[in-house]
Image 1 (cartoon, one colour):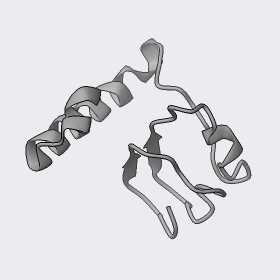
Image 2 (cartoon, one colour):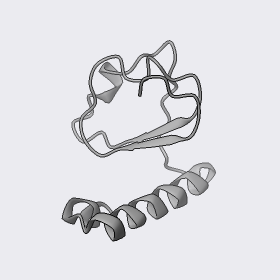
Image 3 (cartoon, rainbow, N blue to C red):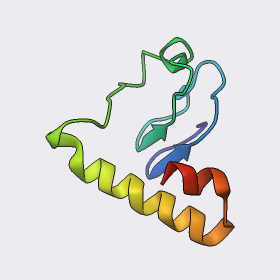
Length: 83
């Protein structure tokens, strides 16, 4: 996410190192299947939060809508399995 100043990104694969180094705003949903994202993120600029718990319901709903739209537009089996 270089030069990101707002909006959001949804990452369904592995990230590179120093993730978020160019982010000055916005947020990212990152699927962390190998539990290694914490080692690849720029901790000076990025705050990691899980989208579990009642306080994160709006984010979970937003992510569900994003995944559903992705599946509709791409017919992605991977996306369908996640949604």
